[in-house]
Image (cartoon, rainbow, N blue to C red; front, side, top):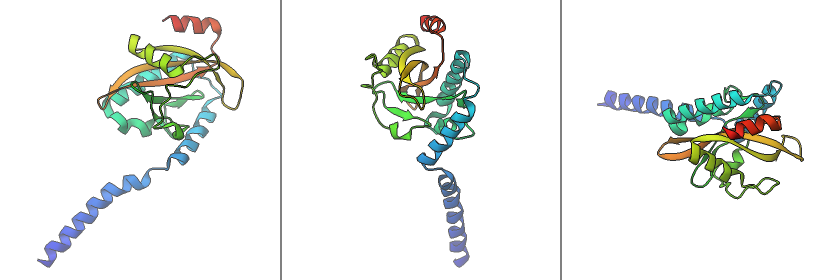
Length: 189
């Protein structure tokens, strides 16, 4: 009987470690964000093109549909393919514009952003949600400061509606440096 209990304890301990080890390996949000910022800065020398942004958003949406929230760690950290060309993927809910995943600003996660406006008074997240609801996705323009700057510049974000874990959400990615002519073409799509 003693051998039975020893075997049972050994199985329990093994199962505990299988569950606990991945949790112990997870980085705290602040460390992961720092790593994500470093990856962002390292990738900025070759700015993302609008075409690449669309490809990455589509790939992220497919990953979310397949894996749900379990995909969030793949959008963060120095090894993420979704931090590229000086930009990154984020995810927010359609219903409340609550940030669900943001690789460089974890302090935004869990916060509703529906009231955020650009310097011209445009409700940014409302615009993103409308583009996603009405067309399934598209480009949204707004004025926003580039990282490290205080003066707003033209920023375009591509957003796409995706349903995962039973919730309608928006996957997005934004870029600076698009000419007004190219921005006009993208917004007309």
